[in-house]
Length: 98
Image (tube, rainbow, N blue to C red; front, side, top):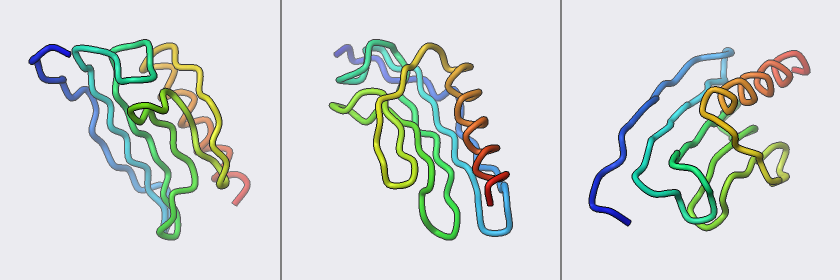
């Protein structure tokens, strides 16, 4: 790993319901996070009623994956734009089902 620090690309929080919000954090890092093949470190989460109901992230060692309804599954990362599209689509589906 190089000594160069990462660059914060996105750090936002949006209210999406009376007791729900999303948090979006994306960094460009000098080297891939362990388990990932790209130079982005990210955490996108939907929190409702004090619980994280959807999260897509690439925690070091686990690589790209998503959490939904207590289930963890792989996530196929292709680009930051696609990541945001996929996440917002899941948030929209959750909002329609609630």
